[in-house]
Length: 62
Image (tube, rainbow, N blue to C red; front, side, top):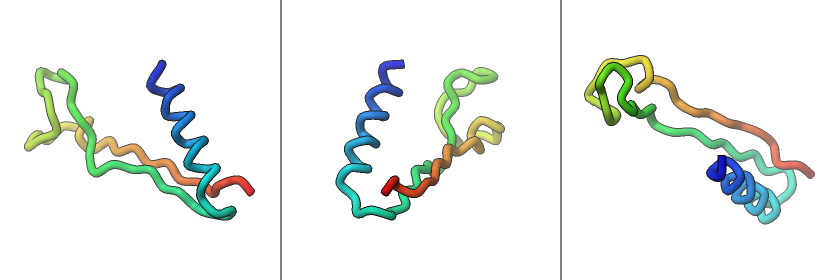
């Protein structure tokens, strides 16, 4: 939970320094396995968790 609080602060600082109306997109290139079905890492494994990619998009307030 501490990581979420930290990132909330990072995004708050980012939003305070970009010009008004800026759009920010946060994403990743692929997922990661943390022991699911005995696999660790990100490939080369054909597992649904590897295809789960975070994607957050939004307009900066203001």
